[in-house]
Image (cartoon, rainbow, N blue to C red):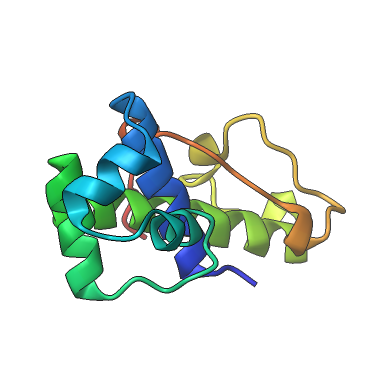
Length: 126
């Protein structure tokens, strides 16, 4: 199962790490407890829109940018899951370049993880 809170946490962590900032710095700036922010980054807690706004402000990232990156990752995860459930041959030709050299044939969907920076993801309209 693809959990949105895990994808969101991964993206938040990457944003923070790209800036070379610690959990302590961001939690202080966002006025969120260190433990809670850590749980959000690990996908263990669902973040409210108010909390996401505070974290985005602390990271100086627009929420729309954050959500776009999460959306891109969700799309890739859904493609990988679909490909694993059927076969890599059933993935549309227009989508295959997005999967790169990833082979998911015969891999259980819960074992598929795709990590890609948002700037490397092309969105193809079907």
